[in-house]
Image 1 (cartoon, rainbow over the protein chains, first blue to last red):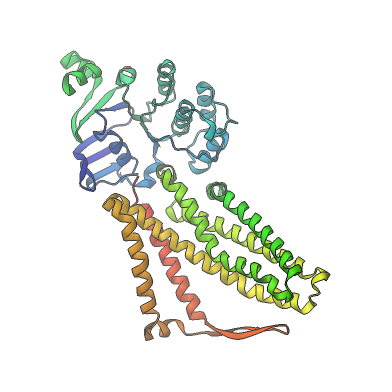
Image 2: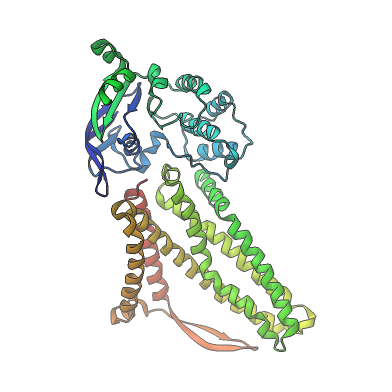
Length: 229
Length: 249
């Protein structure tokens, strides 16, 4: 279970998150939604232990999140940076050497699905293929929490749908939770169990997608249009 | 161990360009030495470029560490999202630099040795033996100073990464200020009686008294080595602690 208790984050004087409290269970696909710069990426970085709260507490499975929480958290950054010195195969091998939970067979399977060539040098990959490789490296880990910050960025609109569906098939919802941010909310809405809406760094709403349908008769996209515009 | 070896291989790949450029520079220095040997009348003068190259090696590990950490800074989330402790991540960079400096110095050593036995330069056996022995005394010290400076680079880099999110554009200025201030404090401390008391024990004299050349004996103390060792180990673990607990992306 991921818990955030009264978490605030400031970058110098600028407030990124304000007094966020939430609990995220295992076995869900959770979308974090909100406008640009509202704090979605900061929220993921705090859970990954790569950013530290200015006040409040973030715990993952009862342990305070710091950078070494990565033993139970797999994180995909929105940035396009990867180990450019490697080929795709070397990147997989390096990931396997660092994370004992990295499932190479699963990585091979996802790589085949993503149509990525193992001998290709990372520095020569297109933006779309970099995105695919980041997804492989993140999804092939057998960890309880998978965090993906804008995993679809750079991917062709034509392939996004199939990649989203594929991604879901590689997540074991018995033992894993997938938390993702995306600007393309309409594209991920169909797979979400639950969503967290953030506005100006504050938690606007956290709810099950089904509950939203039942209570307001709206999907996440429609609810966002109604609330944010 | 598999994880650490993979880290070391990765660090080597990050810095190998500098390493290979260094080896090419070594060859160029050997060629310059041959050229000077043919032009200069005093055969020992021709070894000035080699000596300069050896001395310049004190900057070797800090340069390697800086280049490696600079690359990490551009993709910090990638480096920090790793289950290994920061000390494990950092030690791999030091060992990478250590392997490279040893290979580079050995190359210079062997090349100078080969030049010495070229009959044209008519150096006697004693020159070769004396240089060999003085090399054995000087090289470990060059390597030690280089590693110490490398750890200092790590510390100031970690401090900069920590301050970056706290004070923004002032962080570089604060780090430069810290470098100057700490240098001044260390210089002050080293002139106190306490420093003498702490370090001047276990006297050892390093003698360069050979048949072909001699220098005044250099007085060193086991206490000095021990003092520097403690400082460097302390700074190394402080850097690792800052990276583990304070650095953010």
